Image: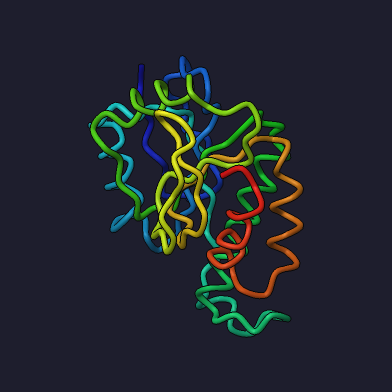
Length: 196
């Protein structure tokens, strides 16, 4: 198994790694070009060190600094707009690639040492009807236990990391495109109505 480094040319680039995971086909990392040295490179190294070896695609985040003069019908702050549009871009890419499901993370997350083993074990308990798995967040309302491995998220803030199945790509893309509160606020709204 070889872990490939992302080149400095910076483009959406697939990093071929171990392919024996049965649940998550692909891990997308949303990262700003200017954050390679400070966020992306250290994250990739930590993932390698901790055995987090999914097939990876880096999605170049839209930088709020470059969006100050762009159309902004919902009046989002530039950085919020950049984050928001980057999550739409990641979901659109997953749809284009026709992935059964995708894990999407931001470049400032960290993984537990046994993340892969825990996720693989948890997937055995995955409810039949699920719309997303939240890998982290700030819960403003306590979660409700669903089974031994999963909790129902009622209200959580943050887009640090989540897993989305193919049947929800269009739903999230449409909702994010139409919403007026940014990606964090939109996903928070969906927690009460979807199986997250």
